[in-house]
Image (cartoon, rainbow, N blue to C red; front, side, top):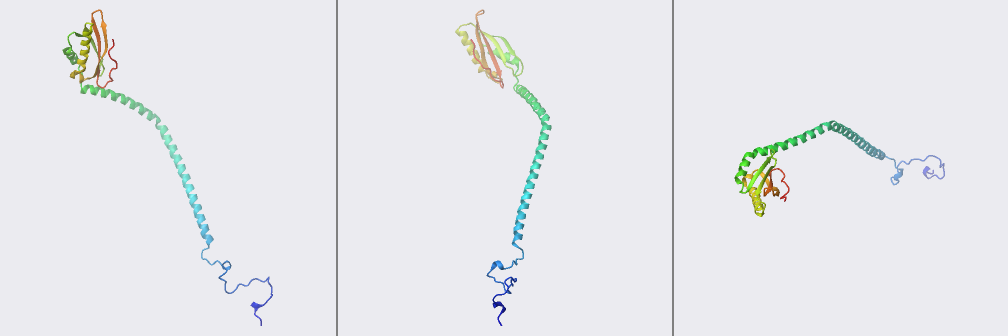
Length: 215
């Protein structure tokens, strides 16, 4: 009796009979016996990446919305504080002006200038041939203007005027209060044969008077 496995012919349309022992050399025909399928891991990774992207986008949009709300709040506060800021700036300018006045007064009190002492000292150092016609002092830290005359209109009278100015500029007592002593005007007076002179004494802390001898 011939074996059924070696029997030739037969019905080829009959279903294929699975052999009792698989052919391990044909990997494609082997059944998938994994506990967890490969497709499961692929789908899990894709879902994780998609979820992470969704969370990132949501967090970013929430951050942008929070920044916009904060910016709007700050702009509202700035608009509300603008009048107060303007008023504070105006008040600070007033304070600066008052501070300057205080510093000026304090400097004057710290090194007090006594006008009568100045006149007495000026009279003591006055050289022969020089006379004072008027002295103008208009208040604290204001320049003192002295108008006088020198007898004569020749070169010798000019030397007397020049030496008098140098004497005033080198006087230690005057240097305590005045930064500059400038001869601002020198002119001839033919009527009484004299030289008219004008001296400006500028206190320390004030800008020096620009100018020189005017003939």
